[in-house]
Image (tube, rainbow, N blue to C red; front, side, top):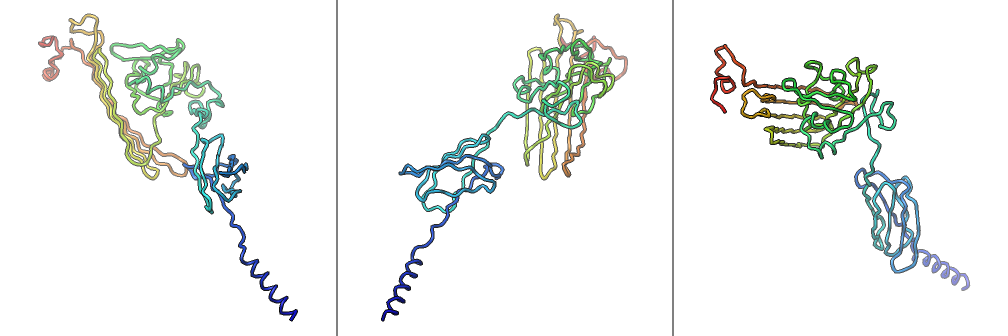
Length: 347
């Protein structure tokens, strides 16, 4: 009789153990909303709603934390590189996921002019002056001449025939190296590059180094280097750009750009026309001090990134016509430009 009683008690105790299941672990998972990476060392504060219970934890590399309370919880997540996130975890949730948005910080600017490889401006051997894309947009400068005309230590001069030229710290334009994406421009007239021929529509930034750079860029860099960096990054798909510019002196510009990017391939095309009707203080004269000028340009760029090496093909077409209203032609085809001959009937 005693043995049976002990056996029954043992069964009841065993059954009682089974009727109380072990509490299940609740987890909180935190990730970056843009990259999906774990914001390591984020500070996480747990507050159980309705009670005074609270707990503080640091997020580890696995991105998961054990939720300390079983009820409804208010959670606060903070990190120096992210916006503070406030959220609520309902009671009974086994796994709760929260994404936090990264905070945009001003990082050190990257320069490439005068460097073996791109590096931060702070670590550059040379003092590189950087003209950002935001500044270019704010000034709405259509050409490089207009963009540099208000920069310190730079002076822009205009010639009625040869266009505009630049001097830096008193050193004239024939000693200033002008480049686009690190490639020197050719086609100098009287030693100068006409800055009106360089459009700003597809420019990302301009890097300027004042002073002698002949050791790196040759004898025509005695006064400094101006490097125009064009835009290269583009989101997948098509993007478009259009701009117009007008001045009361009779200057009218228009340009159109489009780009396409997919699977590492990028294609960019820029087209534009610039027109200047001419200018003179005495508008009654046919012989103007600054002759009428008309420019057309096209820029095609193909790029492909292979194993972190970017290959590119770039083709530029530029056409410029400067009209002299007093020019007399003895050829038979002079009638084609009759409006600009001395015997024409225009005003």
